[in-house]
Image 1 (spheres, rainbow over the protein chains, first blue to last red):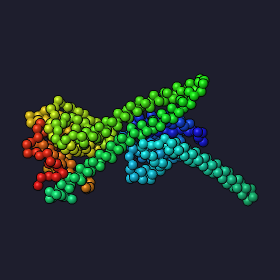
Image 2 (image 1 turned 180 degrees about the horizontal axis):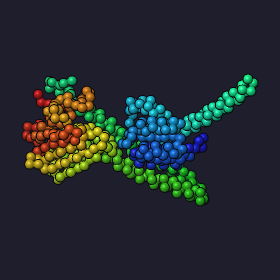
Image 3 (image 1 turned 90 degrees about the vertical axis):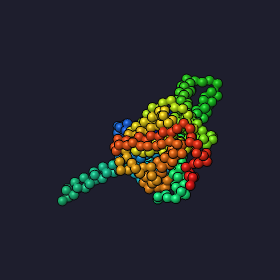
Image 4 (image 1 turned 30 degrees about the vertical axis):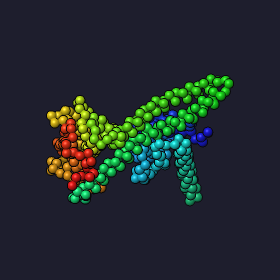
Amino acid sequence: MPERTAGTVMIVDDEEMVLTALRTFLELETPWAVREFTSPHDALEALATERIDVVLADFMMPDMDGISFLKEVRGQKPHVSRILLTGYADVENAIRAINEAGLYHYLEKPWDNEHLRMVIRNGMERSSLVNELDARISALEQANGELLEVRSRLIRMFL
Amino acid sequence: MSPESPTDIGDAVNSAKLSTLGMLVAGVAHEVNTPLGALASNHDVIKRAMGKLQDILADEVVDETELAEVRRIVRALDGILKVNDLAVTRVLELVGSLRSFGRLDRSETDRLDLHEGIDNALVLLRHRMERRVRIEKDYAELPPVECFPQQLNQVFMNLLLNAIQAIEGEGTITVVTAPDDRGVRIEIHDTGRGIAPELMETIFEPGFTTKGNRVGMGLGLLISRQIVDRHGGRISVRSELGRGSTFMVTLPLELPIESDAGGTPSDPAP
């Protein structure tokens, strides 16, 4: 099944077994590159220098919980789509996550691979649309700047 | 809420038991969902991989590219099968602890290996400790103790849960067991915040809690003491503010004669 955008997914979970399961599925069944981390701190360091399109993070991690981590991701790279993976349905935390970390999606363990693929694909699209929009906005801003420049030159010529 | 009449205390003890049970169920659901999530995903991947392998092998001739793909799939399967071993072991251990903790399959009084009860409680509380609380065990050889296993397990659960909650950030819980002239001794030491000297008198009283005013809260130590009393044992505490607490339980090897099998903490004799 061809995907419209190939990109990179970052997965962060303190449990190796979850990382291995996610990575194996993504590598065998999708065109996306995978970067995996057991430590949210290491993940943030990598995020600063690498191109990441979608971040999928576990909620319960010993060093930093998934919501705080995704909040940091938003601060550092607002265009990256953020997905929280949680082990136990917890409405209170879901609401907190959506409000605080500006979540793109919320998934529960055990997850369904087909659903996961769809959520990541939509996240990829969202990231690339936001990137594109940003590029268009800065192009517009540049054009607008040039226009203002021309206008002031014209005004100076005729006054 | 301050329970006064025996009925009030009975109700309060029951709601405390339910609150522990609710916490346990939520915790175990969370703990099971991690290995289960990996297992479910891996099962799906194995089915997909099987389909791919069958497609490749359906051809008369397998070329180099296909062979490389077969090798890639087999490597991936090897990795997830190792994960499945771990995941299955984890689920079996959790379910085993839960069953043994509840003693669903045994009669009410039994001779219990206390270490088994403590270890089960530790497995069930693992999600509360994550990696911030380290457990150290100093177990001596102990004879089995005649007891109401379900009730003693409740005591271990209460004391360990308190120890975990007393630790802010990182810390250590040390469990020491030893034979005692009266029977056996269990010590649970934590490096947590400790108990203020002026509160030491009240910690075994109903309603003592540091966890906010909720139904079923503040009865853990009261219930623990009632249970230990019923077993003819003693429970005591040593604590230093800011450095930690040690709860000591001593138990005789045999139940006292007056301990009737029907007596549970949820229906105290009037």
